[in-house]
Image (cartoon, rainbow, N blue to C red; front, side, top):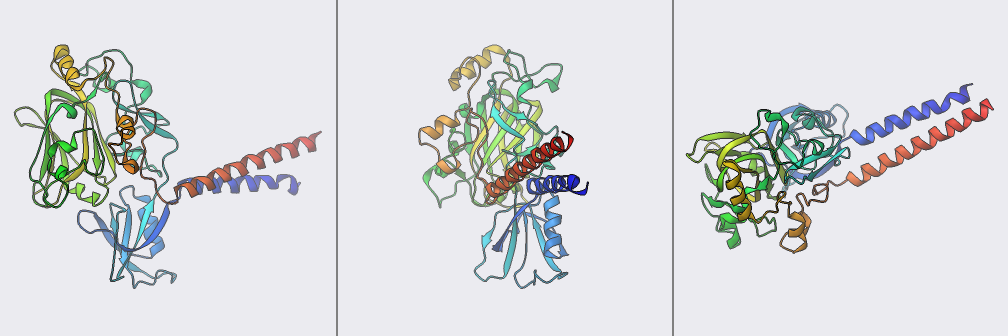
Length: 399
């Protein structure tokens, strides 16, 4: 009898192994430090293992830095660690600092794609709210600064006004990237890079190549702004951040303004990811200017590759048709053109895809992700094999 029930123990072990593999954080130890400015969450005295546990449970924590002299391998040895919002790190020539970088596998349960309406939407087992999204133990396709994406299944193709009585219905059909037809300006121009970095239009030219980026000086209240071609109802704003020194974006906030300059919405940046999203539900209106603006208390450079402002004209069908003509958008909404940008060679291949209209959003990927996924797949395979063997044993015993 004991032999007959042994597979249940194996089954439980496999289930536990599968759960651990899918949810564990992959840590990489580096010789260097995660930058102090803007990224500090807190500091405390921990053992290194306890610090991993604490950072692993915090969705905002990207890693931690500690003094290289700390004896992390001595059981119970406590050292001061600094928890950071980003996993970006810099080598330390003096070898005084060490860091552990938190990495998460890509979320397998859902993906993002471009709906025929022009909006980004979520397909699969989507998170229900921002709290659930932040609690995920996997990396979403795009970092969400605020809110979650609507489900693709709730977006329909009929023409429905954005400003309906039910603001939760998410009906922004024929939404377009209005920034493409807008006029861009910036507070200052950094002189140490390509000429295109000084061109404010580089951030709304629908390209994310290495030279298609804006870069201001490093000072207080730096800003980049796009004036939309008309008053608009804005549903989503997507920011393609510079990968290097991406943490600087934490010093800025997204601001939506009316034509008279009145502030309609201000949202701080919480993510340093290459691509991040603000999902605005209900849509904000009437928006004429969208800007990224820094704080006087935290002087910093602003540099981004692209800003997409997804929405549509607010002032009736005729105005919407005029804007659609400016953008050259098809009758049933603007298809996201990132795939075409990639194919034409106008984008930087390693970072060229945001949403290509064919399915998932491509990220940079984290070292160890394939390994973790492979082990999880192997664990599932073992689980299936054990179950099959167990069932055959039961049938053999019965008959």
